[in-house]
Image (spheres, rainbow, N blue to C red):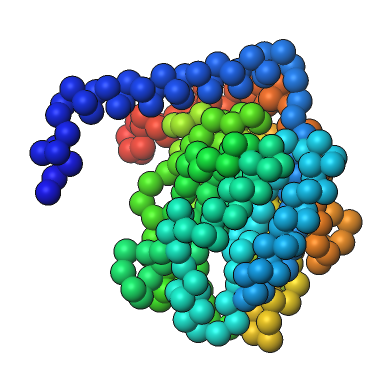
Length: 317
């Protein structure tokens, strides 16, 4: 039965109004800190997940506790933080809805540590038995899931000198962009292979006013060596956003190895946090300063100089 037949138009308006008021309250709260010139300490995680759910959780739990001791307010985990399959079909077997027991444990971790967590991508139960969603989940410091983004661009690639990947065999693509207010600014959510599609990041910045863009990833060793750093810095420079990229690192099993190199990049394209060892498990810390975003954007106002939004045809040039 259609939603419109179940809920009256007035009820829908009321729901929309309540949601809008909540969003405005969050924006006002976070805007006060930005206006005061406050910085916020964040951490970007690097880890080597396996097909052991419990071992991965214990690693994440330890890192959250260590980050809390360093007064980190928001911690960013890589793609597949909770599970990386060793055999075909394993990910489908453990996939759960976002209100399932696996994600509930991580929500409890956020609440107990009083810390926002970026968790992505998570193996969310998909539209049918043969596919899951690769989902980036944002949890606030009360343990509530604030928003989630289902990865749009799927990794169907023949990696030179390596193997053929076909993510679409077991994963359904998302179809919605996601931005969300947070204590460190307006977040744009992406996952891994999305990084190669700059138009997504342009939309997040210029259409949805993102200030910090998240790229949790599990780049292959070969593609990471060739493109990881340059792609991330390019996305930061062209959007004038902070880019926070948590990475899987090292060998997960006999068949799969990730590049690593978790980083935080400022809106000028400078790496401001990076682990000293590209393959170690841990986290790097940086201060997010929204006034730096404003400074870069004021001195180089590319938003004002853009012409292609309203004029794509060559005859307009």
